[in-house]
Length: 385
Image (cartoon, rainbow, N blue to C red):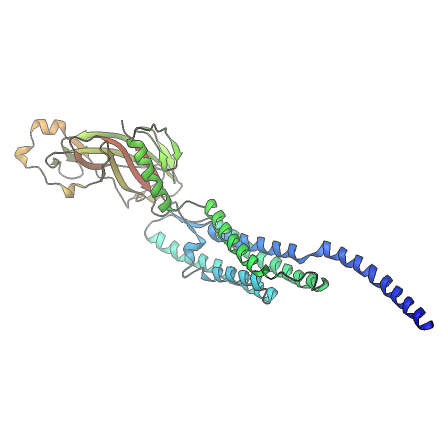
């Protein structure tokens, strides 16, 4: 009898003792679930990818992201990103690994700065305009934040995880696989957001430019100036500012003869069955520093027969003999002055010249295409009437 009595009391004591603990534990679980900290860490890691994908520097208006500095200057930054991925996936020594990852990122930014300094020396020798973009200092600041805040988050995850029942919060069998898939998605999201914050790749713009050529030939009306999926549309006689230049296509004319005024009034005629198309261009340096005008490249003329022609030089032609240069030839000849390149243009000074094409006599020019800049260029489209 007494034995049963003791058993009843012991069971009641256990129930009273256990019940409050369960309530307290449930409260702790709701307030301190480590998954929230893990998401915070993942967000920090995402920001490091975004900072690596936005412009770090620019050369004559052409931008370079952190990826452009990877080999050999900012390679350690990429290592830091990979170490952060290891922390998220397998949680191996998270505090230590996060500190190391942050240090590697800082070293990567410092390496890119060193590369920038070297580039500045060469830019000075070749009179190029090299500038630091916002991404470089932002990446440095974020690397330090990631190292400090990320290490703190990892420490809190470890502490809070010890308070939670391992059975109640045991990961499902496929939990790690889900995290890996989520992190892969986060990586591409970060790179894409950084890409949006920077500039579109030239390959994508080349494809869209081809689409615009087809539309132009088909007779689609183009407004000016306007940004389209294929580039910047401008009209003859209307100046447009881009990348520190004020660009003007002054005129586009058909010619039977040209005279090169840079030399001794050399006269040229097109090949048989061909004619000249002369494009006069002016580019004014509207920046604060002197820079070279070698950013206007790849001029292409498109005709009504859907053919495209590259620019030519007088080196591709033969001089006319003196007996061929009659009064009629002199009257019809248009002046040709090669558009300068690699010349240092001071601020508020124009760089002037002509672009020369040779097309069949039975074709008419309908559009002029060219690009400004080599890396991440801006495509310019000039509809011709």
